[in-house]
Image: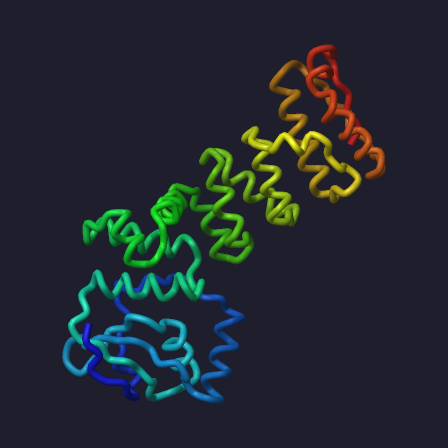
Length: 274
């Protein structure tokens, strides 16, 4: 890779091609960046390579280029790099954006998959090139098997990025339902983690004594739903629903959590008020 120059180039000369790994932009952050570029210009230059005649192909800086265009800038500061292959261009963009935490995990995963399919790179080769371990690469690839609905929740910023990895530990058939529950009930990352551990049966033994009094109403509703699904799977149940205050729900849930096996065994008809 050889740097040819570092200079102002026409914004109109820069093409965004299939090499770009970014597919989504945060609207609020883009507005802020456009305002900054309009006032002070692009302080950190983009990275391009020669592309056709008198044109350049974008390697790094998609947000900055987009902001410059929206701000009406005619030129933009750029590093022009010669002799950069397609594979090295994608690796450079992936490495830079990973360390800046500038991509969502699905964009990262698609870039990794592309390096494997198009350039026949192994997981080990990619991990070494971008400064990550094999486990990170495998986890990212696993995300691509998640339902499109979950990916859409992340892209629309409804579901936090840091919730994605723990959702991936669930069977694919359960991921959409749990993701939608997390969004609907506004579960914290910790509550979602505990909920998934309970579903998988991987909760630490130290969690046997649960502090029910600290639970939020949303978490209580979620746990009741989980418990009723368990009861329905064990024997016939008739549910009679009626109003009750949160304190009574907490007391009831604590009792059910401690004696669930006995309840499922001894009662042919279970009445739960919630």
